[in-house]
Each structure stands twice: as C-alpha cells, then as structure tokens.
Amino acid sequence: MSEPAVRETLGTGRRIPFRPEHFRWEGIEPQAYKFSLGEERGFDWRGITRFVIGGPPDVPCRFQLRYFELAPGGFSSLEKHEHIHFVIVIRGRGKALVGPEVFEVAPFDIVYVPPGVPHRWINDGEEPFGFLCPVDAERDPPRPVDEAEWQALRRNPITAPYVF
Image (tube, rainbow, N blue to C red):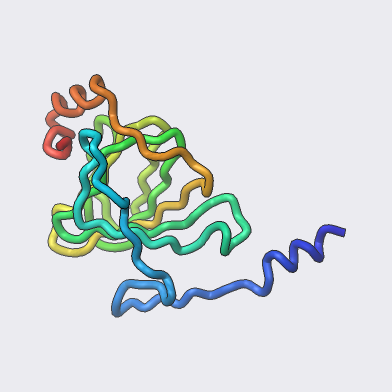
C-alpha cells in the first residue's frame, strides 16, 4: 500500500542539463562556499564556490550532492568532520591534503577522507579545479584541527606548505 505514496514523492524524475561551455548545470546557482572566513586558525579560504545539485527538500533522499569549484589560487578551509567525504574530481587538477598526505588529483580520481581526518583542497594550477562531493544531508559542521594536529601537519614536509 505504500507504493502510491512513493510514486507521489518521487514524481516523474528530473533531468538537469549540463552546459559544458560554462561548466555549469542549468538552474543550479553558485553559492558561497561558507558565509564567513571564521575566526579559527586554518578556517580561511579563497576562490571556492559551492553548487548544491540535489538533496532534501527537493529530492527525497538522505544525502546531498554538491559540486565545488576552486579558481586558480583557490583553497578550502583546513577542517575535519565526523562524516566522511568521498570526492570525485571532474574538472582540472588540484591537490587534496588528507591527514599526513597530499594527493595530486585529476579528473575521475576519487579521494576518500575518513571521519575526523583534517583535509583541505588546493588549486595551485592555472585552470579551474572542480569535484563532486556527496555527503549525508544531516551532518556535523566543520571543526578546526586541534593544536596537536596543527603542529604535526606543520612539521610534516609534505603537508606544511598547505597549513596556513
């Protein structure tokens, strides 16, 4: 008996056309990455835009699909969460600081960030760098790295250039 209610909720489906000339999805407007730089160490960011492609309340699901794009010279905040990240690069090249590692990433590479692991996305190239990031629709907010994590990342020659 619940099948008709499911059909009502799901409707007939939806297609969101992609416009490659602008590297944008039709009707999906850019949003601020975050609304402030934050006062926590490492929470600054530059040249990053967020696009919410789908999720509640528009789509009846428990996740949200987002696309982030970093302009040349852009970077995200250095943060951690209790939820995971499973990122799929779809545009350009960039770097992913994940714990004690920095990965060079290119289209169709996948980066997994475990819960509680510090991470930052960096575009040190000359072209836009973009990735899809599906996450739980209800999730914890970003947290700053603690003093021990900050010091370990600063001492590590691999991560130190990206800890600021």
